[in-house]
Image (cartoon, rainbow, N blue to C red; front, side):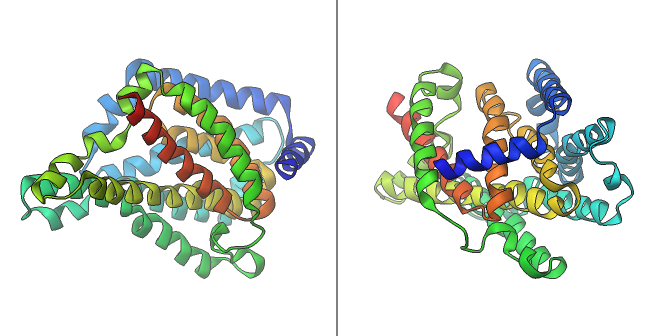
Length: 311
């Protein structure tokens, strides 16, 4: 835990700017209010789910807060070089194209059309989570090998180096306490556990399986999706852009990470700002995302467990 606190203190001493931090939080607060008040994500964006337009729409949606916060860097005269930096725009194009494709991916459904309805329902949702390994993790690994050199060719933090599990175990333990309390909230209870809406119970009954089999299948796939979250947000958006923006890449990443949570419970979206900020700082200094993966998967499974116990 001392190591994490050391990173946080060092980052504040090197990058804290009151105007930037206050304006960034204000910007995200306004965006959160607009999204949840007008239900932008569910009422408008979800209309394009499973449609070809979903890909470019998701790319633009995720790139908007990242670029908006970069504009704040220019506004406060922190860094204006990115505006004319071709490498910056090349990385924006690649990164958010992959992110939009991953978020809008639905083509696996065509492979399941001949299955029985119960099988199709469960497998569609399960494969959707696992598909992120192929639509996000694999493409970013390829991108890293193609465009990065030297010490940056670390698969955007996936290489097993500079990893100490102890601080993350403490962070996860602290998070578990807050999650246990949060599980009593009605908004959380209505959203979790995700397994309840997967059709896993009917799938197990149809195939005469213990329901634990469908639970394990679904939860392993669900947990695997967070590898993609970490390689995109703490890996690519921090490590690739830190070459241009320095540590301020963490601040820009937090904006896109916040937008990723639109559609989830409001409390989860708000806390994603601070959680993403801390994990971003850690990945910036360690050049490793395995701690974030452990915490993310642990938090996801604990949310499933606590919400199930509430039921």
